[in-house]
Amino acid sequence: MPLLNVGQISDETVVTTEGIRHSGGDWCGYFNNIQEANDWADRNPNSLFNGLRATISGTLVCYGGAGVGWVAENAPYGEIGVVLGDSITANNMSASTYAFFKSGVALAKNAGVAGETSSQILARFDTDVAPHNPTIVHIQAGTNDIEDGIADATVISNILEMAAKIRSIGARPIVSIPPPQNGAPLSAQSRFNELLVATLSANGIPFALSWLDAIDPLTGGFKSGAATDNQHPAWDYVKLAGDRISAAIGSLHRWPTPLMNQAGNGIIANPLMLNDTNADGVPDGWIGSGASTRSISTPSGFFGKAIKQFASAVDISSLNLVYGDFNISGDGHKVLFTAHAKFTTDGTAKASIYIEPYIGAAGQGRVYPIQNISGGFETQFHRLITLPVGTTKIRVALEMGKQSGATQTGTLEVGEIQIYNLTALGLT
Image 1: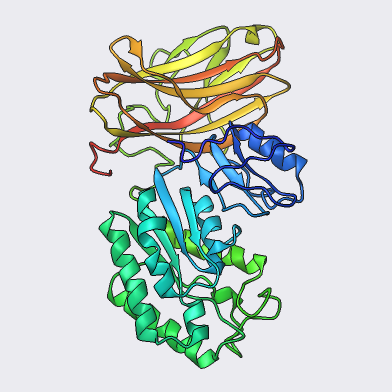
Image 2 (image 1 turned 90 degrees about the vertical axis):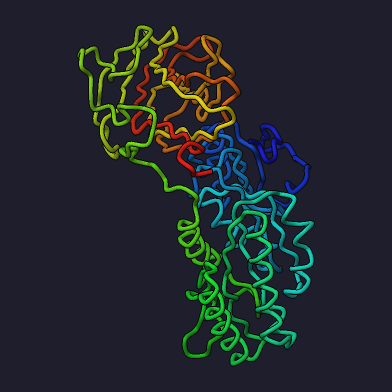
């Protein structure tokens, strides 16, 4: 479900499309796979992207300049988010956009506008939030109201109405308590924050005490070095606030991260690769093809075991494949595919993993969480797809082969594989 599909960009290319802009030295870009994204980061060591490596393919990363934040084509949880607020949100490096990226929420729009009060933010809801069909909306409001002396009751009423509107479109709200201000009366700031926390708690609205780390306990204002001016937090404290928001978002996800896949509600019977009844090196329920050497391994950091394909410089010249076919049905059902993969290579060997619905013997189009990656990686990924009408099974395939005529050695290990029919489980 690409929210924005701007194609591959390079260091020299400027992409201009809604919400994606270039300004200064950093870039926003849609990368076709993990390797592209990480190669870009290596070429741009001063970018803030360095240190937040891509973990899924199809990820739009946007750091610095005038961009809006981060957008994931295939967000791990299938969540779509909007961040709504004032200048503290409008900054593309805001705590909320950072938190959404870190939490696996696809950012459909940064709806922050500098200088706005809560009444102005509320007035934009129908145009800036609702059309994007979000599942999670973050609210950051109140800073300008406090500075302007607007009554606490008015501001809190506006925030409650925002939360009600969010819920009315089937999304879930989360509110950040405003950061301190050096230019506003500290007593007014403290009073408002305490009243807002009490009101949100009483109404069952999730919130984050996002800016606690930036507050000087002696003055109630910003700590020394915690702000760029009287209102706006410095980057180190933006990240700390983002961590707090991300932790709060974790409780809002519609389904838990099935990283271990040991639950019995998936359609793959042997998700942890524990059984190989015929001792052919391929777990039960899977089929091997090609000249690679296949075995069941226990890689470090994996829960359970993994399918391991090893191909030498001789036999990697053809495609090597392990695949499994799993019965599933449900017209239009939402299905979550998830796995843990590790790939090592001494050159240009490439790895791909795809999932494909079938109607009888006819494949309906492959979806690649990982495609033609020629460098080493380790990732836990999720991919959400919709079953075509008439689907009878899903194929999961783990591929390894040569690239550009090279014959290099590679090892692909994949475990913790599961497919969840979210619709059948009542999770959509």
